[in-house]
Image 1: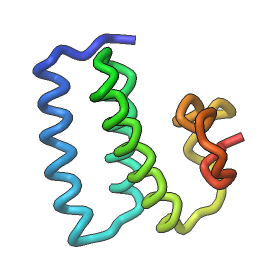
Image 2 (image 1 turned 30 degrees about the horizontal axis):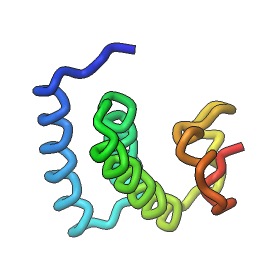
Image 3 (image 1 turned 90 degrees about the vertical axis):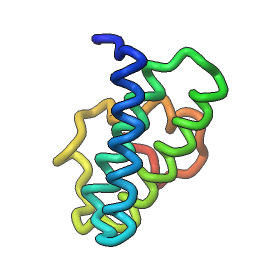
Amino acid sequence: MRVLSQRDCDVLVSANHQLEQVYSAQKTPCLALHIARNYYLLLQQDENINRQQRWRGEAIMWWQLYWEGRTSKILELFYDKNGLFQDINNNLNDNHLHLE
């Protein structure tokens, strides 16, 4: 996997802030999923523990917004067997976040 530069991370954070503003007006589950995936990417790329905790919290929050608002209940349409948030889910006891 390609490691993001600090500039790439800053751009991704800025993009997420813009997407969050759009989400607040439209409440689109697809947009929440996109934001969650961006935060998950930041989580994977950042070595700072404090920022990792922040990115993990943001990724989980946005994933939950996606999960609550989605119209399709079939996650296999979007994810492979391993699931996008597998490492986050291993630390959670909330069954509805598990993608297995």
